[in-house]
Length: 326
Image (cartoon, rainbow, N blue to C red; front, side):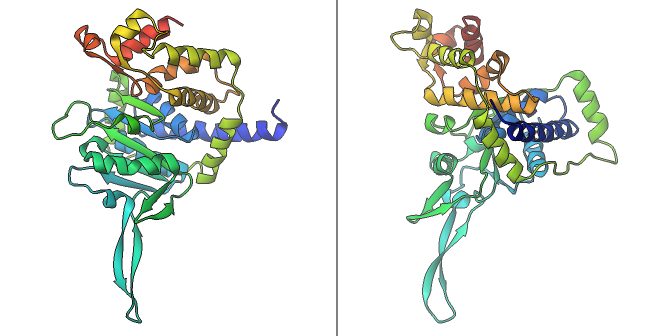
């Protein structure tokens, strides 16, 4: 059982996340589920991929999060001519005052606590892969030298799903590094009406910090200390393993799935479920958390084959079928 200090720390962090969620709701309208999933991504210590059409406040969400959580943030607009050095940094040859020449490392924009990789699929595969080491290992290697990134370090990348000319699909190895793929849809009528009133007047709402980077680090430690029930673990394992087209899978799964999620999907479920519970002020995750996370965790970690696409079946619909079999 957790001791009183842990419970007190949990309640304090949970209250701060509640304040962040409320503040975000005043600048990003009609995206409550997106806000919750993005906060859970950071609380779990992971990276997020935001997929949505232009104009749905993806950039505003990321910049507002940086202000609310007290994180140093930088934004990189990914383009086809962007080079790895433009993201990671590079070494330049300089001449010192005494006439000696030496290399000096100039850090790139990746050296921050929250990196927004805008339209990440517009960069070449070479540049996309430059982020892999940073996302997984929290450091980069340039010219054989290791350079550690700040702590905490998170990448929130955006992607436009409707305009694919001149884009490069993210490789599966990089997609797997994103804890969640969060699809951003259009707001409902009431939220869009409120957005019009609040964002086109003389006064526009701004957010102020309600947390610090140390609070976020504490939250990530708390998430890993939270208990998770055996029922939840079995539910996660059953769902992830049911999506793999191996010998134990059903005939329908083997006939429709090209490749399925690996063990990192189970880890993502476990961490993100506990992070959602923390944000909601609950001391342990519930089956509903697993249901909420099924699509964000699995949609970028599996692929359907041509037979599924010929049926008009997409990944989210297939995950719904898997949930129906739990």
